[in-house]
Image (cartoon, rainbow, N blue to C red):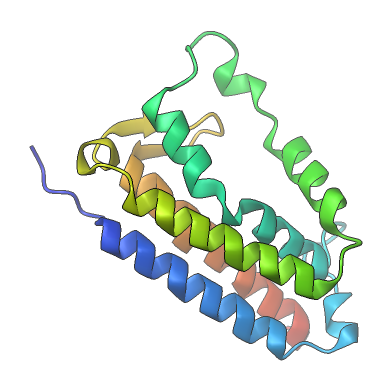
Length: 164
């Protein structure tokens, strides 16, 4: 039995670091910055923040999937269209005031921290594969979604705002 590489504390700390960084970046943005394009033919800065807000409470969703995985063969792997889901979540939020989007991001992250803290070490050590193809221990999947996924979007936002 290998020791868990990613601890509960690691995940909680990563979420906290993300919330602080997202808030710091947002605080430095001008009204024009929010409209800058982050992805060619895709989201602007505000829409990227909408996406992060939509994902912020995602830990509970990921933990529930790990605890009771959907039956395989039921189109679980191919049945989940991440792009369609992302587009829906962003369009549902993009007309809201920035403060509301940031508040959702903060409260979602707080909910994710609570969900992680309430999860047993046994479940965190379980090998899982998510419907969107990410696999590893539950702890690794959670850490990847926060540290990898979210940090990458923040890097992209900073690059867009700098115009680099």
